[in-house]
Amino acid sequence: MSTIADVAARAGVSKATASRALSGRGYVSASTRQRVVDAAAELSYVAHSSATSLATGRTGTVAVIVPTLDRWFFTELVAGIQDELLAADLDLALYDLREGSRTRERVFAEVLPRRRFDGLIAAGIQPSAQELDRLLRLDRPVVGVGPYSEGASAVSIDDTSAARIATEHLLDLGHTDIAFVGTGEHGDGGVGDERRLAGYREAMSAAGARIRVAFAESTMSSGYAAAADLLSDRRTRPTAVVGVCDEAAIGAIIAARRLGIAVPAQLSVIGIDDHRDAEMFALTTIRQRPRDQGAQAVRLLLARLEDPDAAIEHVAAPSALVMRSSTVSPAS
Image 1 (cartoon, rainbow, N blue to C red):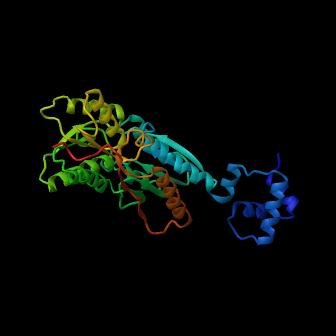
Image 2: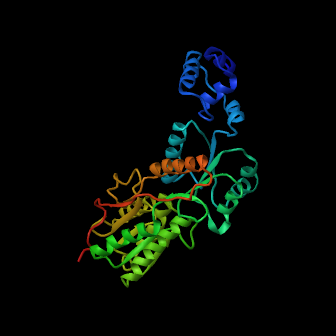
């Protein structure tokens, strides 16, 4: 196996010059850099991460925190982060930390402070637990994915606005008896889910309509269970449902079908996210692209790595109403 010394000898330069040329850090003339690159290619040389770390002072690793990989959003988010990190020749250290778990507390209190990494991308950070403050005290660049915070760069959709737009879509169709299915005050959802509940409440209050919430986790099975209970009595059944996410909305559609309720003729359903299965269920939804958000989070982090004193950036990821056939005007 070739070493940096072999590359340096082949290119006729010192090991330090060869290292600078291959790492891209430190001045090397264009002709010398090309000579070193050509020598490395001829020798099939691949820099060892430990050696690169010693030469540059960086680990080449980014820590990534998500609250779960069970939900489509976070799976897509991590895929986008990984693609962008690999394109930048960086590695990923992934921590799947369920909210409220002892493992999550241990990672925040013990693991992250002693592990070496260049920066951190965190989704699902809980302000109530001062988690962002704890990450910032690690003295490494931090980028959030989710609701914005004053302390770190972040990329996010406006969750409150997304739920408000979804609810207003149903109100514009003529629905007034609209229920919200998902997490919030009595569920275990994160800040984004709570803001979606707030957006639903805002739209309903502005319309003078009754607020109805069926609390559930942000999963298809939990959305199904909550909707089955909500829809079981025809005398109190709403004419429309807003799901905190597409998984909850799809669960509501399945529950309605099991109860013999036609969607959308007897029940309109709208979700948020544009889940990969949304098209299969013809679900009207508010689209976001978590894979793109993951890539954008990496770009924000790379900017902080290049200039630690750069201004904090808050990037608004696009979201839009996607009309399918799960929503119609209520039957007269």
